Length: 311
Ligand code: 3PG
Image 1 (tube, rainbow, N blue to C red):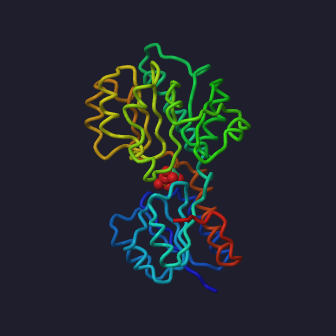
Image 2: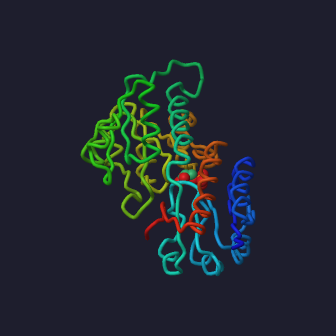
Image 3: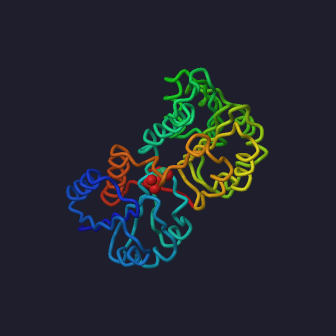
């Protein structure tokens, strides 16, 4: 059956990835419809009307989008986090939603180390910094991204610790990291790297009580979601602890109060990427985009539902 797949990405994939997605569609005799770099929700609402499937990134898929998508059977988030999809609304309309876990993990992991090195070397200003070897990094969440960061940390000669409410301690141990028994214990280590999804439980959960526990040179690395960190508490900790660093790929809407808290240390103690770019590599775009296209073809042609998400 001829199917139409919409690629709707406010933040576009690299061109090479889009060509590969198109190849997967062509091989299945599907049509790929492209809506890249769109500027208004209206464009998305118009584009979804006649499609059978949709590939997105952080694009918001809410009731309004689903109401317009009268033919749509499946939406695949090319990436890991799916807090942008209203899963309950999908379920109510019998639309399958999937993600592509792990496909962009290495890209995020490399960015974590990029930010750590920039911070440890004082943004390359020529002053004496420090080395990462022998230092401790603790992971909140131990899924694909955390594991990829852990692998790099091993190469750097760092010691890894981890806590994940859904992963048993022996699996963490087997991966070569030391399991700890609570979120709070993670904050006894110099680096804490967040790898949890944004949920009602995790929202605002990284607060003053946790951040205040961190040892000298305490550094929070956030390549997860901005909203997991309690904003007012973070700004207060940055203000009151001149040793504390926040390295974040998911810049908050208003960065000015953060900048005011660190003064001339912006770019060293406080790093914000211009736009969320953890998954912005050619490889991650290829991997996540092609996986999403293959999952759509597998769903229609073979009834495959691996990676489908539950509300
Ligand atoms: C993810 O959840 O996969 C990452 O946050 C990447 O998101 P993006 O596709 O919007 O860059």
